[in-house]
Length: 214
Image (cartoon, rainbow, N blue to C red):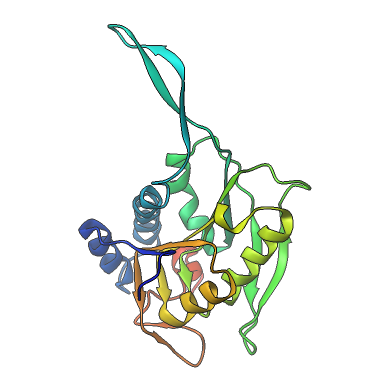
């Protein structure tokens, strides 16, 4: 897959940690740790072009220098519940960023997203939104989330979708509906089965994170 708005990490450490995360034998503690580490690594790549200013004069132990500061307000938008697994890694990068939760679940028959929780303020309080969700499977939930943010007032160029793993079909769906947003993932799998699960995938990320598999 090639696209100017799709960014698949080529970093060897990301590849190793993604392979570790895929393994079914990992316990919830290991899954959470790997999710956090991958979110920081992919987040580092997703923030490469964030705006900074150098207008503030600071002083080192030896002399004054022009310090670098972010000049954009950043918000983190995890999609409940599995998106919570990526929040801590991003808070390492943006410790003061507001975390704006969106709750959507995938209806089992239609595979369409259903919104059940929305913690966005009445008016936008961010210049850039990082949408966090470990998996882009069908892409329907991702599309619905971006729809919500655009209706809230954030432009597509200021919405960055960050995940761990995407399906080829799901990413194409998201890019077809929202060609103006940038998508960052650790890897992409070709196959999406009839139940909307990525193969080989990494399993149900929410169940693996929060130990709720039955």
